[in-house]
Length: 420
Image 1 (cartoon, helix red, strand yellow):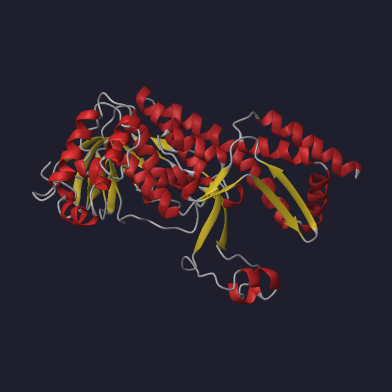
Image 2 (tube, one colour):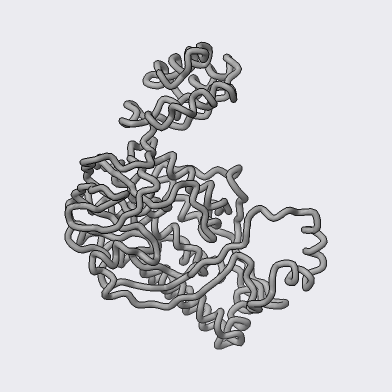
């Protein structure tokens, strides 16, 4: 409790009481106690015992007044498992290179299997990016498996997908739960907090300069590891260092959040084409700067070699048009943890190939429609006339179903096109 200053007696009493309660009391009982003491409590589901390395401030910081939080903040670094310096002689079971969503998911999944885990990244959170803001229902389900809960209040819920081409509009509802649109920074903060809660050691501002079978050089220091996971994105250096880049093949596209086929057009000019929308947005302020990103569809011959495995975009990717990038990364992370527990990365190789099959197929189909206007209009007209057909396609895309279902729905669509 040294992190709570000498003048924080009231908050310290409540914090100590809650820490004693958390082993034998329900969350609702703890919340009731905090409320009765006129303190706002932020606490999720704590399991006993709390993982090693969880700082006391993480349990109690929201019980403090603003002045008390200021006195605590200067002492957090000595208690937190998030560091900016790599310790000498660091050894771990699993070393994850890359602290983005894919890397944090891999770290959390491995930690839940009982492995000690260290994540290293040259950046520092919150890490923003021009993607990852529309979380489909399957992505939210994978996050829940990792113990991460995105609430409706964290963003904006959406229940359907709509394709529009001129006067043609086709709409289908999700077969189940809604999706949520959320800022990438919000997602990253939640995932980093969950990793800390699990006992993952996060090392920020620690760029990795080389990887070997024994571990890696991060922040200029050696980190030894039994397993090395490359989660360092589409331009993965781990992939290159490990020799897994040899089978890389695919296609790339470039996009911006403000998308237009006219490269010279900006959002202000585009709004002139939509007077009603421009009027609705007249008093709205921009929430972020303009960002761009590369979207790619690529595959690797192999995603693991000896004790090194790749996850997320480092292991290959599907085009962002599918909305499946993060969801696929999270499912890969869970599959990788299973393989690590079994001590056999070949299990991950097989699972990775299976997980990517459906998103890759949907990516090709959607890009085909994007590039062929006559076909796109005919398909959208068919989907608009038969909403059940569109719902079937959406179900096949979102759920972990066999390719047989997708083939059946595709055959129905083909028949509609032939007989239209």
